[in-house]
Amino acid sequence: MDADFRTAFAGTSILVIPPITYTSDGAMRMELVGKSADMRAVMEDVDADIDVSVEQVSEYDTPQMGLWAELTERQRSALETAVAVGYYDVPREAGVEAVAKEMNCAPSTASTHLRNAESRIVRRLVQST
Image (cartoon, rainbow, N blue to C red; front, side, top):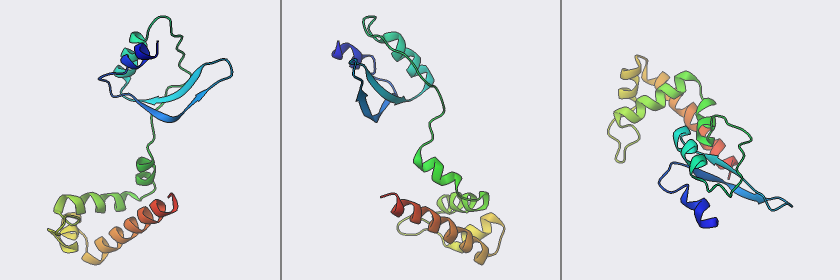
C-alpha cells in the first residue's frame, strides 16, 4: 500500500512539507504543495483502498515571498533592476550608476533603495537561522 501511495506522486510537482504526523487512529497527516493539476492527478491516482481527505486548499506562501512582500515597491524595483544590469554578478558587470540610469533616479537614491532592501533581507535571514 505504501508503494502505491508513493507511486501516485511520481513525476509530479507535488512536494511534502514536513512534518508528517501520525494520529492515534493510524492516519497520516501532511501538507502538500504543488501545481493544482498535479494535485488533482495525485488524488485520482491514489489507490482506492487509501482514504484521502483534503482539509484545506490555498496559495502557498514561501518564506522568500514573505520576505519579498516586506520590501517597498521601490526596493523591489531596485533589486530587480540591479540583477538585470549585472550589479550582483561576480565579477560585478555594472555599478550603482547603471541601476540609477535604468530607474531614472540619482545614483544616491538607487544606492539607498538597494542598501535598505539588502539590510532588511539580510537581517531577516540571519534572524531566521
